Image (cartoon, rainbow, N blue to C red; front, side, top):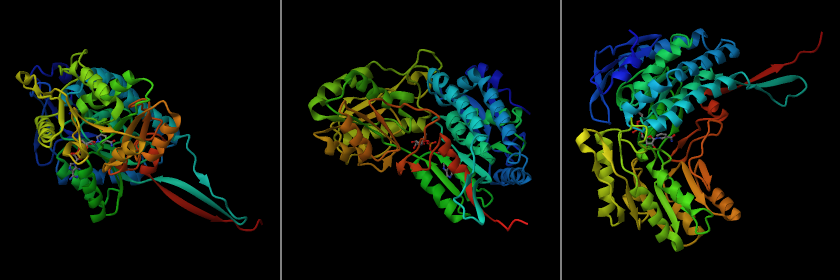
Amino acid sequence: MPIDFSAAVHASLDETVIRCDAFWGGQHRKAQSGQTMSCHSPIDGSRIAVIAACGPEDVEEAVAVARRAFESGIWRNLPPSERKLRLMAFAEEIESRSEELSRLETLDMGKPIRNVRAVDLPETVKTFRYYAEALDKIYDEIGSSPADAVSMIVREPLGVVAAITPWNYPLMLAAWKIAPALAAGNSVILKPAEQASLTALWLGELAALAGIPDGVFGVLPGDGEVVGKALCLHDDVDGVAFTGSTTVGKQVMGYAGQSNLKRVALECGGKSPQIIFADCLDLDAAAEAAAWGFLYDQGQNCTAGSRLLVEETISEDFLAQVASIVAGIAPGNPLDEDTVFGAIVDAEQMNTILDYVDAGEQEGAVTVSRGGRALAETGGYYLEPTVFGGVDPSMTIAREEIFGPVLSTFTFRNFDEAMKLANDSAYGLAAGVWTRDIDKAHRAVRTVRAGTVWLNCWDESDITTPFGGFKQSGIGRDRSLHAFDKYTELKTVWLALGSPA
Ligand code: NAD
């Protein structure tokens, strides 16, 4: 039975509960165990959906269906120009429901709808179009062959790929994986985060409408330690593309080792530094970036600039400027078009963030502004932002990813000290450097160990550029043509040339 997401989205928060089954093999399916899980909106705590909680038996069947679809060649052997048209159609199905999908995303995980409309939805559509356009324009290679032979280096799809995604950008991060994996000719099973599965579940149906053959794309909601783990341990899954915490990323690698050594690509956590040198040309812009670097989407952002490093000579004034921007930010209903700071995804995450704020105070950081719970009367999960000064690199708030609106500020005296602080982290996802000195900027780019470095800007991003982390922030890259590396194997072919007759 197709789910009438569209009607349900408009009725939501008026006591309509969406009933969502899994979608695989071209059909909506309940979990074979009959189990379900409840989905609550962080906006007001109300139950908005009941979702199939799949189990190992569902994984078993969904993988078998995906494998059969792959082996049949129904997708990978389609002419590239035809696969391209269907992925384009997938983009159109999503785009034509942009408004409903935006509302659903906000209802489900609490980020401001203006952010979803401006970023998540357009980027999702753009991602499908980018890989659709790319797929018939990429050529294989001919090696430097001797006179009596030809060597060819060709790319082949991995087979069955499991895409495991987090809750902070449910649709967009799913697209970053599904689109290149499908473009490369794989069968794909998406396992969305249990906190925010709704838009992902809609994708299953939209793929079918776009003409993606049955079995080639499925969505299996459920618990990470059940469905995610079973996919990672499955001998008939050839690759896992994971985005989530470093802790779970390490487990995913372990599962691959325990099973069939499937290919593993990881996009994990971050603790990104914004480094402000005293010679920064535009300190106002830097202060805005420092504030929004940890406030955007309530700090539930892998690239959140959660460590602010400021040169000592300007630190007092700069921190005061950041604090005054932060003081003007209050949480509000994320469905309201004017809201720029929404809800925290659930009560558990909200309490985790509050525990980190307590830890910061107990370990001796200077509280510049302390955010507590707000709007509790709504039943939703809202926090005010917190800014700490005088943070020491040994403190918990300096080392661990908080994934919430908490800023840790450090000071430094010179370039070397700034670089040492910036690299003093297990993570290496992103960094920002603010200076007018071009030599200093380039030296910083070469010294900072991070997958993305922003010079005199923050969070510039596009599907055409790779995204991923150094160190424990991950392995492999999403976005750009480099993403195909995650979803393909290289095959070398030698052809011996006989003598002409
Ligand atoms: P998480 O690690 O708790 O969960 C991510 C996914 O893994 C979910 O779908 C979950 O169900 C699944 N999972 C949980 N246990 C599993 C297991 N044992 N085996 C297989 N799968 C399992 O992460 P989260 O709380 O959903 O998301 C927040 C994290 O994601 C943060 O650390 C954030 O930095 C990271 N993240 C990284 C990027 C990036 O591109 N580097 C982007 C967004 C979020």
